[in-house]
Length: 290
Length: 315
Image (tube, each protein chain N blue to C red):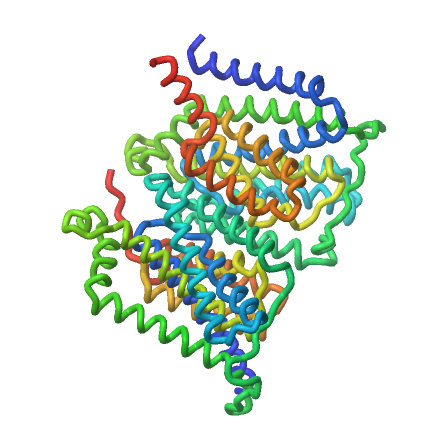
């Protein structure tokens, strides 16, 4: 029981970060059908900027705020200088644009920061909480709480505000949204900004647990993408579900089967799921017109 | 002579002339080695160009097949005492079999789902070669014995330049013929609309599978040659970045263009060699170059330049 709880919490913590990355993917995908492979770099920026600002003497909350602002600025520039000029390009071209951008961001980060691994102090101490024999880091609760807050907050924003309705309208049908006077360019810029902020927040929350370096973005982007696809892309509920599921599977596979192939779990699962359900777990069936 | 035959001969002729001229212009061993790398990457890119450009299917995990060819060439002699050339051919065969087995379920997927499935396949191959240290040497890589043909030790950049060049020429000839065959036309038809192609009597699944296997075989062949040329293999050949490089070669050169795949391979092979002068800035510059190319020459270099040329003549 203790081991089960231990693995459960480890899986939920990692899964929450995958869920945030997958949510960022989904937000941008809904607004533009662009799969943004630079999503993982936002997580990296969140962690790295906080670490370096904190080391320079900035108080932790301010350092975190600064990191979110930097990530949002990078996200908006990515949209303005790479995605918008490439408007109308094919899916594969857009994928390569975002991958090129992620290589660029990583290249710059490696110069501005360094190539070392860095840690942050846990927000409320390292004394583990005891629960039925399992030791739970307080930071895990920060990650879970923060992720839950983001998911609920985003949901409320989408359902309750006028701009949220504009985002949903754009996701449903871009042309129709433009016809009723919605500035879809602003919606897309917003999607990039918010995705960047969500990613950065995930990076800040999880860095005390997992450490960070300039290169953590790639694998996070790939796993976040797998999580988003697992849930069925373009579905925020599916993205969160996919992320948490992936984190749990990884954690239990590492604990019970083999920690060497921990990273393989995500991709084995996505292959098996797609073979059985070609549209993901919650995806709608697409109908091809001739 | 049909126009298709004429353009085929023109491309093969240009390539042959290029193969002969490059050693005259750049005779140093270093340049010949880079050129041999270009030909090898071009072979892999050609296969991917058939899959992506002709049939409209994407693969973000193609380095997996490259790695199967490369590691087979290294592992056969090491563990089974086989001849490197025989091991390479076995690796090419194995890659074809793997593509055949996973091709049918994977190619049922479309768009982003196909992208994530192929990506997963490539990453799994990468994880296996990194983790199975006892067999593959893990992250440290593994040595490849020198190729010996009938008692003749195959060494020297000139020899490898010639070998890779001839293989590329053959690979290009086969790719051009495939493009200009009933199979090629079937692939183009299913690229436009799978349903319309199926209605016209084309076995969509079988044709997609065929081109997937061809692309895998091309990549494994390139991987094997790479292993023999470098005489060393590291898990880097299977990495996600390598898969992306291959896709970028095809897209930068011009999707659906055989010549484009070769141009793209040349650009993405030579560019990093030039960028080593920038040391730390290498990744930043490479990423920026990829974004700029994709934004400003969206159709790719070969079709893009052909378009500019045609417009210039009309004006």
